Length: 248
Ligand code: ATP
Image (cartoon, rainbow, N blue to C red; front, side, top):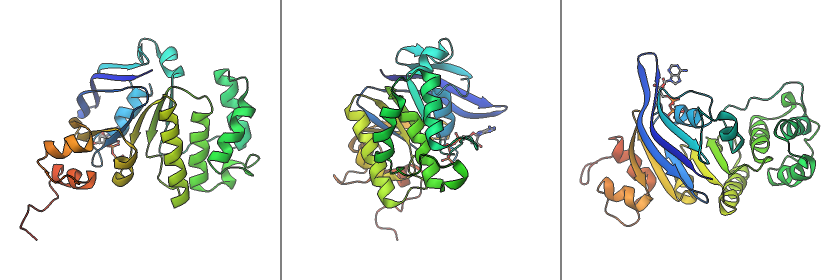
């Protein structure tokens, strides 16, 4: 199941947050969506998840149009937002069971157990959101998305608020899902990590796609010719924050 974005445009009143945006994510790929604050990344992810209606253009999730066939499309995906919203009166375990019931996951308890271990939430099954740290809440949101094992995963800043071990584990979790065939789109400002896990990167700038390719291809696009150019250097050059060679 792949993600296909075709000429996506989204406005908020007079403001055009995203326009002329097209890209694809195939099964097994992890594509990084990066760009400065306000570039349109969250708007794009929310449109892909079916939360925001595109002003123009099309989003296909596993071939289903997110506007025309919203139920079929949304069944294929999990969107993990950067702000962890949970139900105040439901425990961690109850959240997972609720997802199981809503999406018809018969063996939700059996699936939840290894996931809770993977995300280091063991011992917190009976905790309410108010008893969890920010990073733990974020992990619960991610557990709720992954417990259904959908083929398309959309992550908005999945690493914010996680400790260094949590970041490493989350990285492994994402890579494992892609190896098992998921199409993953991941927005993050943690560029070294994006460079490490992503097979390809889409750079957004002022609502448009500035470039799309491997780190190597992007380096060539911005005329950084060193073989070891980092995504951070590429990003700084695109946004005009790098110093040209020879200048301090
Ligand atoms: P960040 O890196 O800060 O998360 P982003 O790339 O995710 O930024 P968006 O949140 O998609 O950027 O915002 C893109 C543009 O749309 C910004 O100019 C923002 O002010 C505007 N915007 C976002 N949400 C709304 C909204 N609900 N109403 C009006 N304007 C909005």
